[in-house]
Image (cartoon, rainbow, N blue to C red):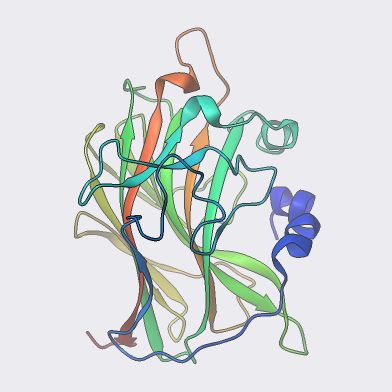
Length: 271
């Protein structure tokens, strides 16, 4: 467990519980999908609390709002305004000032892949705001986490198994999502103010994750140490901002999310 996770993991555990059910699924089965439309999502209300979405209280749970502004498809999407991301001392200190506020919006599936079923997570994501060349000031992300289990098979922690960040610096970055300050494994240029398709394919049998942006692969990478189960706990939509400066303010930015899917993608090595 990384340092930031340790600081609030106990509180999160009390909030959402740690014992998971492990449903079966087969290739092509949808574990979860949404376009954030009404029903069940109600515009102008927080995402958290609707259709099973949660966020731990330290991580700006009220910043993600269902909106009719700029949907990629349909009538609604999710907007996270930078101005609504709440500064946390532990985030700033734990990342040596790399991040100042984080929004973490989570949808559990608690799916046991049995080591044979691959799983694909995807979302349409965009970042609006002025470019910050050379500075990863504001970013929006798709992330996945796997279960760490004890001897009784109960989930006691989670581990990042893939994350893709769209950054205000004009790049997309791939990493495992398991470090307080990300250790980037791949990157590519992207356009701000435009929708991009982010996807992560999890292969628990091979212990790898594959990252793609707009159907272009960023590469396949090994799971980080600590994954001792075959369970995908959740997918998440994340928003990050660095501390404000004289020339960069989080209020100038917004992240948008639409069409979020988690799908059983077939057996390892299959289609």
